[in-house]
Image (cartoon, rainbow, N blue to C red; front, side, top):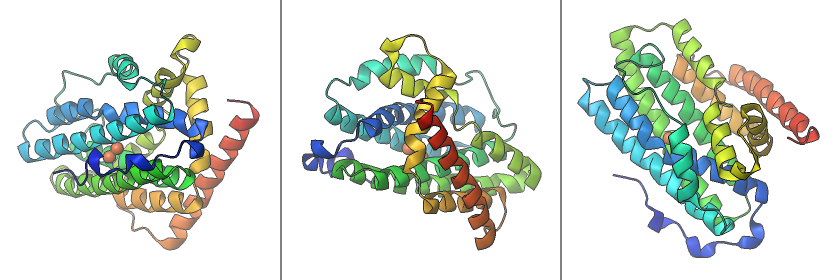
Length: 272
Ligand SMILES: [Fe+2]
Ligand SMILES: [Fe+2]
């Protein structure tokens, strides 16, 4: 059962004077990626074809992701009444496809798949915490608070199943690290960049991955504060089996946060 529904959101508290146009753009993009959760559940069901209890978990998880998409889309349509989520999403989901005829993970093993899922949930939980913090608009703040809590629960869920498969597949530290790093550096990947384009710029000419990945990063990196990055680093370390020590977490977070700051500044100067 879902922890909340759209009825729990105080939509009548929406305050148009507190809407930031850059935040609207990234929320539109996020709404599409989230709404596409069902595609991932189908993929996971194939990877875990002989594990019906995990398949149930995957479908329940996806229904929560789809709800995130619905909440963000509703907010984006309130903030920008010209935004037609249904029409934009139609185009997006046709373009973003996952491998169909498969019986194993694109990450090589089931443990690897679950490590990658953990990394995605680290990204989303810190992203919505940061976005909720950055926005002054009360309804979006509440939507982000609820989504961030779900994403944290998703991380815990995939982590639990990863531990189970680790016993079976005996995937060592270095391979888990490789999967985690691989997934981390996909964060500016095609899906988000394309979502950003499809939501905001489809009329402006053909899609260019680099342009829209940069435009998205420029608008989302500034939301983060050091504490969001620290929490994310601690979760990543745990997922790859490193006991999150305070000094190590703080040091890695400083490096990551410094990089994000620098990149956001540079992109802003370049007018991305
Ligand atoms: Fe989500
Ligand atoms: Fe999630």
